[in-house]
Amino acid sequence: MSGSGMTLAEKILAHKLGVPRVSAGELVEVPVDLTLANDITGPLAIKVFESTCINKVFDPEKIALVMDHFTPNKDIKSAEQVRICREFAKKYGIKHYYEGGACGIEHALLPELGLVVPGDVVIGADSHTCTYGALSAFATGVGSTDLAAAWITGKTWFKVPETIKFVYYGKLKPWVTGKDLILYTIGDIGVDGALYKSMEFTGEVIERLSMAERMTMANMAIEAGGKVGLMVADEKTLEFLKGRAKREPVILHPDKDANYADVREYDVSKIDLVVALPHLPSNVKFVKDLGEKIYIDQVVIGSCTNGRYEDLLMAAKVLKGRKVNPNVRCIIIPATPEVYRRALKTGLLEVFVEAGAIISPPTCGPCLGGHMGILAKGERAVATTNRNFVGRMGHPESEVYLSGPAVAAASAVLGYIGTPEELGLKEPE
View 1 (cartoon, one colour):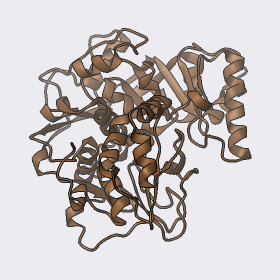
View 2 (tube, rainbow, N blue to C red):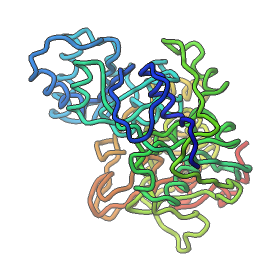
View 3 (cartoon, rainbow, N blue to C red):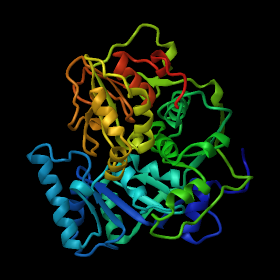
């Protein structure tokens, strides 16, 4: 594991600094390519920024404000939060302000718009900023105060993280996706298994995953304590960026003799459809091993983890010609307006309506217990979201079970946590 070469995280930071190398443990101050906040964290950063009496942001084109958490505004307080961000954006000429019909869930929207490219350094006042590591960007969540400082200086500081290399090989089983892989990985190493480390995802299986699945995996690096979740940019990455990217990408690779803190290998042919039971993302079991049926009240298919078109398509393959169980509320949340339009155009939304599901506008909504699907005392939900902590989706005595879209959709029909196979579906058509 020890070598003199650099990991992907080290390569990106060294390139951004214009130096030959950086090493794990070193403190560095680096320029940022994009900074972002939402309607919850934005007002906090704005308050800190305004308190400095510095009347100029470092670059109005490198700040994104995405009104996605409590929007469409669910109450007066959430409307006031958005107003603060809207007025700040107008005052400082912030180019990338998104609200209303132009708004989507930030970590799905910003890659779609080409605002992140390989080699970037991105910070956001939201822990799931690590999603952009799927595009080979060093992207991580920070506090609102650190974000305000970056709005002033255009820089931020890091301790260069150690790296754990995760290698995936073999053939995926039917219906198993990147969501199952990352849940299985978190179950293996624990919620602090990669604490302040870079998770470098690699192997033949990662190369075969869609960009949506790669973003799902990078998104949940934080659920293992990771600082970043990184993948090398390849032809699929460049194809995704075609017609989107606002800057030239910088394609970097880890050295063959890179120094890794650990290397973990997984034969994916041994990984079945999984579910994370309450109240930790690491409390993972194969659905087939659950034993007694776990009856549910709600299903949520969406979020920055699994609200992309491919996720909705997989859910539609399960729900087509079937009905949501009368004891279940099934809520479908397209992550962005583009995803919504495509799902409308290709008939997915009709499939969901015919099945008896509820279609929400793009929003984080229920994922953080905000709105559009809050749980009552004692209720259980299967969700394609990323966290299932106590009270995450509503009442402290409710329960959230994390899964991929196939298990979520099948569970919506069955009324209990189950798989597409239980509905007679052997593999996606």
